[in-house]
Amino acid sequence: MSDWPDEQGNGRGYGRGSGNAQPDGARVMRHVQRGGGSGRPGQQQGGVPQQPGYDDGYGQRYGDARDDMFEPREPRAPRQDAYDNGYDSGYNTGQVYGSPNGNGQGGGQGGDDGYGTRAPRPAPNWRRRIKIGSLTLIVVLLAVSIGTYFWADSKLKREVDLSKVIERPEGGAGTNYLIVGSDSREGMTAEDKKKLHTGSAEGKRTDSMMILHVADDGGNTMISLPRDSNVTIPSFKGAESGKLYPNTGRQTKLNAAYAEDGPELLVRTVEFNTGLRIDHYAEIGFGGFAKIVDAVGGVEMDIPKGFKDEKSGADFEAGKQTLDGEQALAFVRTRYALPGSDLDRTKNQQKFLAALAGQAATPGTVMNPFKLYPTMGAGLDTLVVDKDMGLFDVASMFWAMKGVTGGDGKSMNMPLAGSTGGNLLWDKPKVKQMVSELNSDKKVTVSGD
Image 1 (cartoon, rainbow, N blue to C red):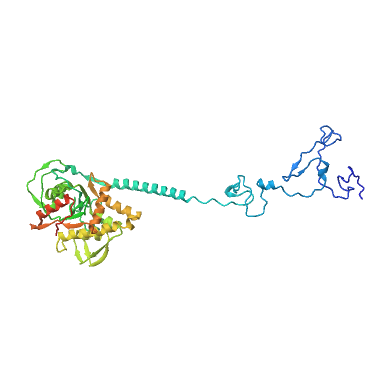
Image 2: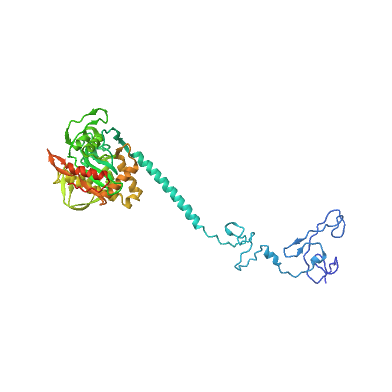
């Protein structure tokens, strides 16, 4: 027994040495106010005010200033509504609790419910992602296409004015292009001229000429015009002077018309001697031609018989080989080392254009911007066209040329009927029939040499 007094009796002593055999229970330390006397709990004057109670969430209160609060109590099972109100027991039963909105999602960021449990992420909306990705791709492709169009269009040299050509024939079906390869050395350095064996002649002359007919309905046709063709120079108006020069019946080689008054007189001469209206004009120089070949990585050719020409720099063995820009230019310019001279040269030019167009239109070039843009840039930098010719006309010309030289259409030389004084005479009846078929967009039935 303890000697300590039992202050309240009934075995509820405060402090050590209580006379009660039971252990001390939980106590609430009362706040002692100064100047106050003893009193009953709940008294407002002179006593200790009643302390607020604490509810542990299970229906049990602590801290009430009641005598029975100090009796030892058996622990009670938690109320079922505690779980219903979002309590997580801490045991992983496979069920996620703690959702403030009742959907199993935690209130924390990233699906954390506040008790260390992460809720599964929602499935991605693939339809929405594909739609956004497709729209983004379309916008990018559209922007690149528009940018490329304006870039390429700005490079076109629209220097030929076909409105200066007088007494023109009536047009027919389809579109007719006069394609000219000139010996222009514009933009070439002394080293370039030496490397490409072009010489240093001033001005420019036509080195090759072709008429490309793009049909509205039917096959396309390409006709090579020998530079040594015997033609009549008609009346014309000077491209620069505007002066009218009458027809005197003078006959000369076709390439002399270009040398005399440029592209406008050449178009006038072709129209006068054929009766075929030329809708567009396109010309490319030596330097641009070589750069295009190098840009596409060279062109493979199968040369049936080797030949060598000091003037053009050609030196080829028979068989398949890949020609770079320098070799390609020598190949299409060679004439004196060939048996048929100018006629054989036009055949080589057509053959090479077929290979070049096929190489330029391969997916490896078209889909590769590191090849496509240098190829376009090389061609457009030296391409001279008429003022009414746009990029779509250039594209139409290129694809038609590719189709014809690739076997989808007809490729031929101008029909000939002998020569005079070293100049080649055209077969006029055949030429007339050919022009009639072209104007009617019919398949050309005549053939050339």
